[in-house]
Structures are given as C-alpha cells and as structure tokens.
Image (cartoon, rainbow over all chains, first blue to last red; front, side):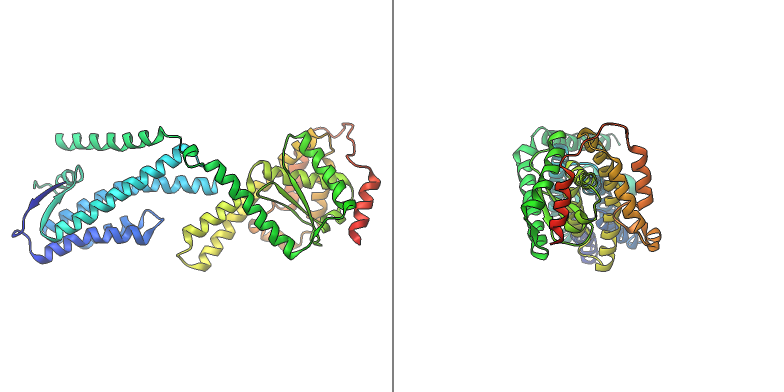
Length: 144
Length: 258
C-alpha cells in the first residue's frame, strides 16, 4: 500500500466520508455472512450515493468497490461450491478444503487491509492499494 | 498502464500460487476428515435410533427378528455390504427407513402388510441402497447446511425452503434407491416383481390429493414409481428361490400380531 500524507489537503468531513466506505464494506461482510453479495451491494450503494462528492471520496469509494468486486468473485465461487456439496453430488475433497483455507486467508487479509485503510483515511492519508489503486486512478482518469 | 498490467499479473500469480501451494497438502488426512465423518455418522444414527426406540418400542422377539436377519444377511452377503444392523419397531405405519451408521428400521406395520418375504426383501434392498449411496448423511447435512445458511432470516421462509429443497432432494434419491434395489435383488437371485407389486399396492392407497401435491412429497408419485420400476426389471423368468421357508415367514407375521 502507498500512503501519502495529505493532512491539510482534505477536510474533516471528506476524511470521515471516505473512511466510511471502508467501514461500510466491513459491516456488509459481517452482516451478510454467509452470502457473499451483501458487502458488494453495500459498497455499491455507498458508491452511487457519493457519485457527486469530492474526488477524494469518489476515489476511495471506487477503490473499495473494485476490491469488493474481486473479493465477491472469489467468495462466490466458494459459496456455490459449498452449495454443490451440500445439495448436489459433490463431496468434500482436498481441493475444496484448500480453497476454503485460501478463501479464509484472502478474506482475513482484506479485512485487516480495510480496517487499516479506514483508520489511515480517517486521519487524512491517501491509501492506494496494490493494483486496485492504479485501476481506480485509471477509471477516474486522474493520477495521484 | 504498463504498471497496472504488471501489478495485475503479480496479483494473479500470488492468488494462484497461494491456492496451488495449499493444494499440495493432503488436508483430508491432516484434518482426519474421514475418521470424524464416520464417527459423526455413527453418532447421528445412534441418536436417531434412541429417539425412535423411546417413541416406539423395539421388537426383539426371536421368531420375528431372526427370519428378518436371515433376509438381511442374504442380501448383504450377495451384494458385499457389511455391518448392517436391523431393527424392528412396533409401529403400525407401513414404513421403513435407513439411518446413518448402517441402521435399517422396519416398522411392524410394514411386515404385517407384506404378502410374502420377497416384498420385504424388496423394501430391505431399497433401504440398503440408501445406505450404499450415502443418502442418509447427505440428507442430514443438507438440512443442517440450510439451517446454518438461512437461520438468521425469516423463519417461515427458512422452513418453507428447507421443506421444498429437502423433498426434491429426497425424490431424486428415492428413484436412485429403487433402481439400485432392483440390482441388489437381481444379484441375490431374488424375484424383483414382488417389490414392484408392493409399490403398486401402496400407490393404489394414495389419496386424490397426492396427485396435486406430488411436488412436495418425498417419494415419487406411486404410478410414476411403478412405471420406472416395471421398465427396469431385467429377467422375470429366472428360477428364483426363497431365502426363508414360507412357514417361517407366516410365523413371523403371526408373532407380530401378538
């Protein structure tokens, strides 16, 4: 992660709102378990509600949304695989257990990263995630 | 753009690399999954059996249990199935079922309703097929899985979804058990026609309402069932033999009446 110090650049209100998007995605994950789509919907709603906001807020909303989308794909695969074992003809295999551990590790890492980012952004730092930050900048068509 | 592409490639490699590294371990052995799965099955079967015996007493009369044990042993030996435990429950309902841990339960009502030993053999073969295909544990894990998934949401919706998916799941398994039962009977040199006749007799006692709520019933509708069973019978002209003497069978039924 790249954290640039922009203490005087953004207002308190902006910092709080930008930080809230990460808090919202965390709440979405916890509240929506075991369904993987709830946190994505929460982040999407937050994104659309802040489309007219300042660049800083929009940037963080977009970064959170893109990362949640990727997480959604990974979680969704695990979700449907589990359902196929519970209701279909699939059985628990080594691949499945390995994928569950992989899923857990990714989610824990994402959880920690989101909490860290939420705290940093609240303090006025600009946190650009590996790959997701670059992609966000490309989408919003502006360099940081 | 170039930096983005490089970062994307690194991320993909990291993800796949992590998954492939994790995949190298034998998690089934590390977690002792098979051992705990078998233990859980046994425990589940014992708990369910305890509940059943508490509700309706188990019949242990020799004249009833021994002939039935002979029928079960004949089928299991010919089909190389091991460790099956038979229980006879004092219940007037014409029913039989399999429980995890290789338990087969026969209701006294079913034993009295049967016209000959081959009908009972057909039912036993059907329950053995459920054990063979591991339907009982699948069904219980489905119900448990659904409870965990939707427990936090609307209770009414949860119960409805459980019922609907549970019964659809059962009908598919029931058909598979029926067809496997025919194979078991064939391998044990037992006539399959009586099993079909028994199913037909049961289907004739279905009420009209059954036709309309078939989708919600656990077993395939009677006529459908008889149709696919009839189409699946192999050779009806073989020289089939009885497993126990007809007199032994009649004595068993007489003993049940008292």
